[in-house]
Length: 508
Image 1 (cartoon, rainbow, N blue to C red):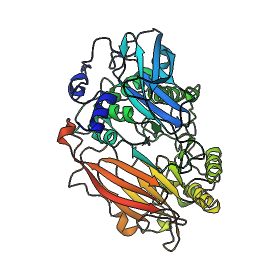
Image 2 (cartoon, helix red, strand yellow):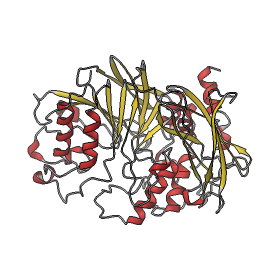
Image 3 (cartoon, rainbow, N blue to C red):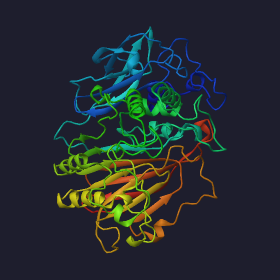
Image 4 (tube, rainbow, N blue to C red):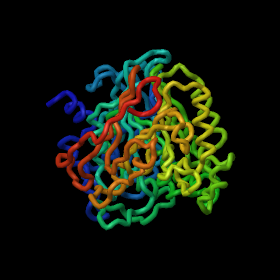
């Protein structure tokens, strides 16, 4: 057994034993986990938000994950946690106790401090006489240091009913420094497709806290997802399906009680710090992470502050100067962060398509999506011009949402084919949403008509990125099937590769 495979077995506990302890949820809604009776750690462990001296460690107690309340009742449970430098926990460098309370879905958000910068760690939890699986995490490099590289994967859109999360299975094997998840971690509604491979329990559409909690619990029972969470720290943002399809953030359309329930459940089920716990129908989602002098991650929110959808794709409406995806405060926050300099790669982790997909290349058509930056042209122009004016060295936008792989060279003016390239965009396809792509569903030919659109691939999978001082390389990964339950029957391949050279805007 290789070192990597041995590590994955230890870290996730999802090798051969995983098929025994995790249920096949493709069957009846009454399926239940077959883990040890009373084991509260069936949802696994996770880490996220890496800083130079620590990170967030997460778990959620649920001995009966597919019951309302997870089988925990109204108990408050003391949960011990440990961080060590070795897999056997011979050198424990931090420990503590958190209280898992029913008002927070019995989730745990431990925040160790004072750890060595730029180092690998292992962590675990204890509660009710049980020990959790072991997770692997790492701290960010020290401020001002220059790491030789950063390797991360990016993914989005994982409808549970439409496939198995084999992309996550392979991401765990990639041994990344970070995993970026760019939205639609779970879906509030049932698929409605005829070719679903497994079913959600109980609810056509979730709309209250108990139901959101259950939907997350079922999502987290997928063995591939548990492996990826246990293999590396995550940076996460939501998109729309964590609340409701195509919601916008001006306060209309969705009850405040549902918004708060959605955000509360999101926080409970993600490796997010205690300071991000929502106390109203809002959550402080946009934030920034530094990876030494090599990379800066700007994790954005294009949902909570976006302008209400227009009744039609009207030219004057989509060009309004006050029409925004980010809101004024977040836009200024982003531009201020980009102005800081001192970083080789500025990476904008966000939800929706940034480049123009007007396949005629003609602004006059105004047939532009409300759910992309095409529908918010002034907002996009201000941000793009902003990084040009601030002489940002290498801006790269990272995107999810559209269920296809895309690679785009970003122009200063998308409707002028002579406009210079000023950046790049990498768009990850869905983990499962859309199911296995068939030969009858070819990708659109936007690339032929859009000179700034380099590639589109109708695949299921993820994007694997490595950045160093001279270049950023992106591999668009394709899994052969999301309908086959066993990853042994699934292959992984590189569908396309692109490179961004340091100081040279656009893709190669």
